Structures are given as C-alpha cells and as structure tokens.
Image 1 (tube, rainbow, N blue to C red):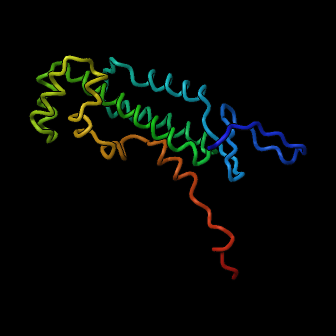
Image 2: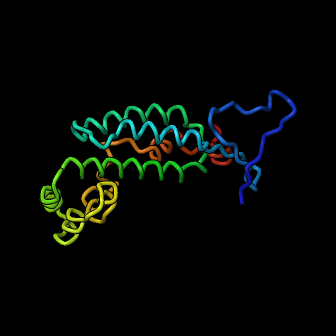
Image 3: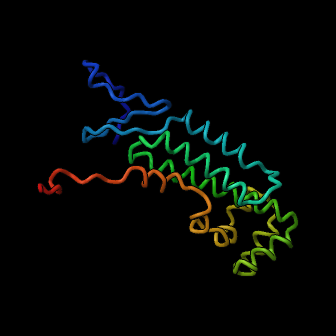
Length: 183
C-alpha cells in the first residue's frame, strides 16, 4: 500500500519544487508521487459548477469551448502531478461529461422532445423512453443508459478537453538510459 509521507530532507538542494495544493505520496518502491489535494479538487468542482449552470441558455458548443479553455490552463498548471493522479483526473472528466449531458436534458424541456432527440441519435426506443419519461431529475437522467449511448465519452473527443488525455500529452514517457544510443 502507498503511504502519505512528509518530505523531510536535510540539504536545501534536495528540496522538491513546491507545488501548491498538492499531496506528496511516498510509494513502497521509494518513488515520490504527486497527487491533487482535496482542496484543489473542491475548487475545480466549484468552477465547473459555475461554468455549467443548470439553466445554461446558450449552445452546448459554447459551454464546452469555455470549459476547454479553462481546463487547458488548469492542466498546464497541474501537469507536474504524477501518474498516480490519473485515476482522479478520469473521475473529474466523467463528472464534467455528466454535467454536460444534464444540460442537454434540461435544454430539451419536455420528455417527448428528449425522446425524439435520442431516437434521432440512434438510441433504442425503450431505452430512449426510459430516459425521457423517467420521473427523476435531469442529473439522474444524464446517467441513464440512453444518454450515455447517445453521448459516449468518444463523442466528447475534439469537443471538450479531457484532463486525463491532456496530462498524457504533457507528460510523454521518457526513454531510459539503456535505450539511448550513443552516436
């Protein structure tokens, strides 16, 4: 198991670069991992809530463009997180996609309009009816199978920045010394 540890180093030259709102993780293999703190995740969730309000009156494209700009800058700041943080970034991505699906449900206003929309996207009739005529709110309906089939994670690629894929782009794996060739 990984254990959270405080870094106590004697010489100032050994101190790691300070990363605000991060948690340092000491793994069993002796490597140090950098995770997002709970405070950082709460702040990001609050900003995402502000940028995806329930009464969004403009197009979904405008919402995703604004979110993409913010998430690109946010990831540029927190790119120093280690690979241990990838799972948390995937959870944040899934939450953002669900918020956007909830906006889509609210924009359809009536169940029959949502039903027509889902049928036009190729969702089966019974699944579309189950999502459209579900007696629960937009947040619950945004995670129904019909909505996740109509708007799968692959639908968001190119439309919305994914924190997980952006981290992978910024942190390309480095070749080890054994693989480098002397010229």
